Length: 632
Image (cartoon, rainbow, N blue to C red):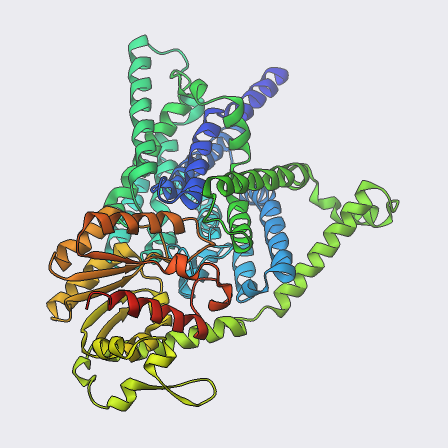
């Protein structure tokens, strides 16, 4: 009898692991990785995160039910201990490794390193990023090797609270049906919060990061476990029922895959229930995969998915550090496919090292023997693997700790400070152009003279290498310029050349954000007959997005588009190809080729190789002026 009870307990303990979930995890992490590496092709890959959340919610709740069935109680302390053993080692290794790398090789990322690391260790990084104005969607200026830790924070906050809530629900409510409805109600509240707090046309990072606005995916998975526990599902079911389950599973998987490809992060539908619907699709797929009577557990089980699924946590964890560090040193805009493959290989390689030497060993490690283990490593033979590993780990950790200690908060290096100062000054000046376009003819000396670095007065023609005829024509030309931080970096020179220019620039602006800007300018009657557009630095663009602008601008206005020089971002060539294509589609659109004009002149740019410095701004303004004045 004791042996039978022991075997039953062993069978229950092992019946929880469902191999097909590794397949679901694989699809989710592939979507997330490709969303970051191929944003123009996997436009909805960010939806892999709610898929993870649903799987996590179901598995954790199902595990709690199994423990309750096996032991008659929930050991919350042991639950926390198991979660920490599973999640913390790889997280700490990533934070130490990344901090050491930043300290040695990429010191421009030292700013706010301390806050990032501490908030990650405490699993509150999502709120830390929100409070510090970080943006998940600013693909240029806000990227950090720790951006993605927000989702681990949301999950871990759930792990902290949910076991206690689970015990209270089981003891006080008891009825699983009522508990299921209550959890579904809480998920609906979370979804409604996302919709209420989301503001169309503004950065959605607050609702994207917030625990309150993202918890619905985890709650939906948890709710499923109350009515669909894995240990109570029957393996033998009628053939018709099996076909129905398989068909439902196929439809849910197909819709999820289509969502990963096409459901863009800028669609209002996503925040007005779209992400909730994707979570429901994930719930359906999880339910079908968990059912032993259906075939999806077997269909989603293969060596590749097993390998990826078991390492999906590590793959997700190391993706951003690898991508940020790699792309900061390598020009990924050319040979994009090659660099994408290289980054994927590096992510998988680092993940495998972590899995073999950090995650797997420390999952089995008895932390009660930590001191004795460190003592053995310290006294191990100098040439032993154990001693070498101990020394290397100690050195890397020491470098990381030094970096974290010396890391400033809210500061930037001298190069970044100079760029920020230039952009801020030019932005203030640009804002004035929107309300003072008639003041351009006040002082002819101001429009015809400038000051060189030697304080020797020079004419605009000399400073920007323009003919006097071009300067005269520029003084009369009314221009509306719309762009991002690159336009702002050169706006002072542009307004010197074109005193009647209206500039509307915004740091981090993308082309998809600009139709509303053009409509506003048109409504205020500030949309002149000559348009200058400088967008594409901060993300990919499409011809459909450009068509929205042209529907507002019309066919009579002359539009000049400046292509982009952003060699550390993979969308550079796609953006430039799109801009070249639209100049062929619209007779009134003309290309200003800043990329080819500047690409051989690294000395024209700040360290980011994107924003023109004082020297580069002169060439930037010269090119724009000569191209715009050709037909005048």
